[in-house]
Length: 148
Image 1 (cartoon, rainbow, N blue to C red):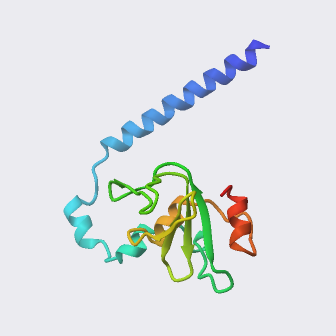
Image 2 (cartoon, rainbow, N blue to C red):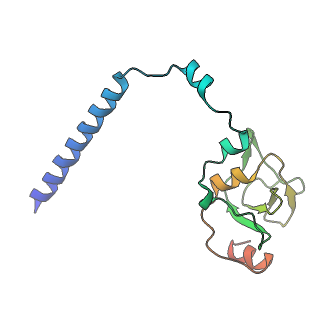
Image 3 (spheres, one colour):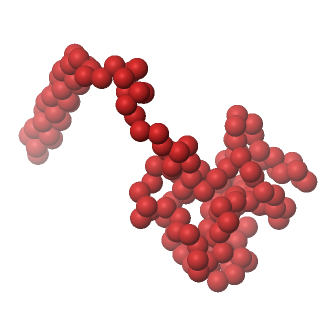
């Protein structure tokens, strides 16, 4: 009974040692390109493309047939080092974040106040949202599904 567990523990420790040895070996290898050369040889990538790391299949579609996506954001929303508050009721958590067809991001607090957040973009939304799990025919249906 305990032999399997001891064998599994031993195999795990051996795998850890092998991984640590590989990391040490990689750390000792000389870097073929210095940081200055890497910056000079790197192709120029637009900033918006560089910040959106998701493959095209997982990005929010162009939204030809729907108005947008929504997700729940329960913790305080920090944008550019500042906690985002609702301008009307000073709520700072439990947002619904909307990614609209035109590429704008809108926030809705628990009390129903909506405000545009120009410092966020669809790339931010793609990085922080999970896959779309349901289609909602109306805004009210979507809000009810998200608990608002």
